[in-house]
Amino acid sequence: TRWATHGKVTEENAHPHLDNQNSVTLVHNGIIENSESLRNELLSQGVVFLSETDTEVLSHLIGLNYSLTHDPLKAVTQSLLKIHGTFGIVVMFKEHPDMLIAARFGSPLIIGVGESEALIASDLQALVSHTKRVIYMEDLNIAVVKANEVELARFDGAKLPTKLEFIESNYVQAELKGFPHFLLKEIHDQPKSIDACLAGRLNLGEGTTKLGGANMNNYQWNNTKQVVTIGAGTGYHAGMITAMVVEQIAGIPARAELAVDLNSRRLIPDRHAAYLAFSQSGETADLISIVKELTIKGCNVFGIVNVISSSLARLCKKGIYVHAGTEVAVASTKAYTAMITTGIMIALKLGRGRHLSIYEGKNIITELRKIPEKMEEYLKSPGDISEIAEVLSKANYIFFIGRGFSYPVALEGALKFKEESYIPCDGYHAGEMKHGSIALIEKDTPVVVIIPSDQEKSKTLISIAEAQARGAKIIAIHTKGDKEVEKLVDYSIVIPETIEILTPLLTSLPVQLLSYYGACVVNADPDKPRNLAKSVTVA
Image (cartoon, rainbow, N blue to C red; front, side, top):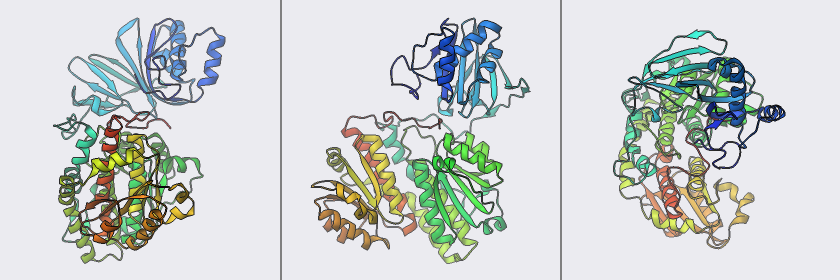
């Protein structure tokens, strides 16, 4: 019953799909790019379609090939060779009820091996309560799966060994543990997840970090000429913050790229750059596509990923697990702040090999170690979040603004709030408001301002004044004890004090909570926003 990629969300478009003889049943994750031409070809042969999906094309192809060959494996292989696109599929044949056929290209697929049973899923979370033994399928793999046997091959028929792996002991089935929703639980998990992310990676004595998974010696780190972060959605925002921190403390050029945009441009590889691919799931199709291209061109690519043994982690072969733990809610929270934390540790490693002094390095580490405690402090007393969420829920449009390190937080806040409450809102650089978007402000338009006590504060105050002059209602997320901001605004949310480059780790918490309570106010499901999936495995 997968969400619809093609067609409306209807029962007819829901998976599984069958052929006209009801002899083949198919579920599919991915996109068949040549589905229209194949559909027309099949219509000319008398095939009757019952849905609008691209997937149904494949079920009919397999059905027709099976009627000719009566060989399930051959029917699937022949059909897949005719399609262009991505797929993770599982096929069942009426005449072979004791067997499933699975195949993968571009979409994740994992086989769970239990006691006299086998399971197939696209995510470890679906398997972990049933078995700890799994087989990770690679692209162009096809498998014949029975209760006590798994046979693996390539599309050309070459047999492959079935490499059995074990799910890490710290990868456990998620539980609510008293929270009403996973999103709220995962927001409150962040003090522990940041602790886990930092564990064993901070070297206070030398004011630097230990990042073994990156598989780089000091010479290689110190000869990195540029950093390029790549991501989608929340991963892109974490990459933006990382790029800013790299420039600030390492003094080398850094930029953030959207994976989907980089895929559509002519790629100019820089073999002296470190490319950092940010992803919670490690299965984002656009990201995996560009990482493959960078790898082919001999670039230095690192996966910054939460899910162990994900496609991205296996593709990069080096990188850093963020160790945020299992994340169930579609909106990423603890993986997001863990990715930021990882990016800061990379920036510190790069900085210490250049002009950053041991004193400055030690100071960053000391403050970084305090972040979990400060997160805990804020979460115990988060302010009037539910009341503010009520105010925001009555708006037609909401601004989220910030400068410097707070600008990506504003983008993330707007993304989170719109996906949870379905209310239109956008994130802007505070200095860009007067270049057009300020025309949208009218009486009582909510403007959420990220304004910690940093070097950008005085300029952000000017943006607040500009918005207030046009009747805006100001909600400020600011540093505790900042009476200047508190007196100016309509609603005040205070965070503990920290150094400038670490402020996103704390200012992100209030925007996450606002999005959660925003969903609750409008009676939406905080864990499963409409039209969205946890892993965007189609391009």
